[in-house]
Every structure is written in C-alpha cells, then in structure tokens.
Length: 160
Image 1 (cartoon, one colour):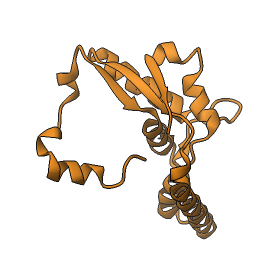
Image 2 (cartoon, helix red, strand yellow; image 1 turned 180 degrees about the vertical axis):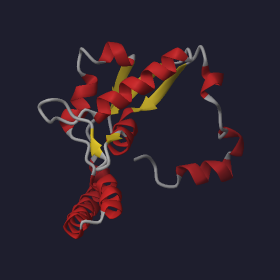
Image 3 (cartoon, one colour; image 1 turned 120 degrees about the vertical axis):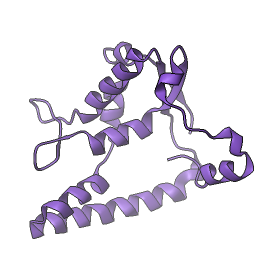
Image 4 (cartoon, helix red, strand yellow; image 1 turned 120 degrees about the horizontal axis):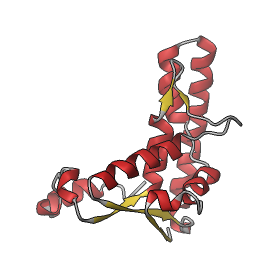
C-alpha cells in the first residue's frame, strides 16, 4: 500500500517532483506500474450486473483482475506506452504490525458485508463488497502466468 504520508511529504518538501501528466504525454516511454495496486483496483471496480458481482468464468473463478489488466494494458499500448508491472515479493518483517492491522480491518469489512446482506440493503452491500474484496495468491499468479504476461507486457518482481 505504499509509504504512509509519502505524497504529502513530497508535496511539501519537493513540490516540483509531483505533477499531473496525461497518459498521451507518455507516448514512446516505458512506465513502471505497481501491480498490487492494480490487482486490488480491478477486483473492486470490475463488476457486472445489478448485484455488482465480480466477473467470473464458467467454473466460478473470479476473472475481474485479468479483464482489468488486459483492458488497461491494451489502452496503454494503443497510446504507445510500454507498461512494466512490478509485483511485490514477500513482505519484510518490519511490516508485520501493519499486516496485523489490515487483517483486523478485513474481519470488520466481512462483518459489515454480512450485516448488509442480512438486512437486504443493496447500497450497503455494494459498499461493503468493496471493503471485503480480497486479492488472493491465485489472482496474483493468474496475471503473472506465462500465457498472460506476453499480453500484459513486461513484469518485474521486487522484495518487500
């Protein structure tokens, strides 16, 4: 999830280091993209139907993340931008406390989803689904699979 407070710090300490840029201005360039952030975005955002369920294949396996990566990659390639997706390695021990906090928040999100479903509240259910969404190791593997990577462009793995 990045470094807490980095963006505001950079805005204050090095304002020239941050600027908004349209993708069209990146034509002819290679850019690094945080794959973990993309995975979560696609699991949350790529939905279908009035129940806002994840896209899935005939076996019921979630495929929203694959559709999201392919769509984003095609858009970037059409703009002449070469994406390199950077996948996180194992989390360092220093992050254990943060991971424990996230685990607790996940439990709270699951409870909120159960409450919304039990109440039959469609809007609360939709919101709770976003918070309760999980990126699994299998989803991570799906987008790194040998048959997927050529379609997505290059990929890199870094530690922590």
